[in-house]
Image 1 (cartoon, rainbow over the protein chains, first blue to last red):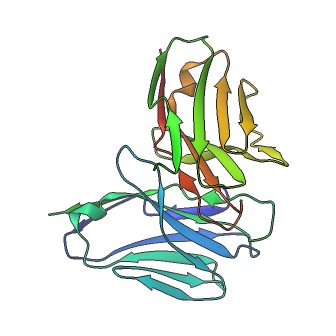
Image 2 (cartoon, each protein chain N blue to C red):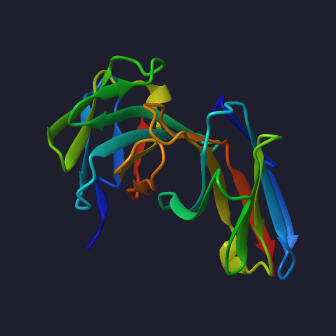
Length: 113
Length: 113
């Protein structure tokens, strides 16, 4: 999407290593930043989200960090497992506005056994 | 119970035909969407619709039209199919369009020959 850039487009890691995916956005009014995981042959599914009133959020092996000043946010997956292999999408939105959620271009994560 | 369902899962058709994809959500959400995902996995929003407003992405050809018989359904009609329409189409729903979890259907793979 034109409002959010996502990098890298592909990422390969060894099982057990960490993976980091980064997104940058341009609209300073954005205050909602979800991450979606899309497994092969399925629709995207929300895995974690963060709102602009916090800088970090964790859920087991997954964490998201937000830097509002620099307008970027990142997904961190620790102790990666083969089942983490999927396409990951970041997105950004503005609570209370009519503007729709905008998705990044996706990252194909491959966890090598 | 499936939260967001789509039919059919696969659709193969000839250029020039008219086709429809059906979507139903049982989550009681106010907003439904249609996305197009191309071969590079980019998720492009086509329509956002609730009982008050239809938001159309300006880049979507007018051969595509959403039809909502009721709050739980948003069907996608495509007229005069073209080769470039081949993609995976996802229906989704959420309560708030800008800052709430979107629940995606399993997708419909459309192939235009």
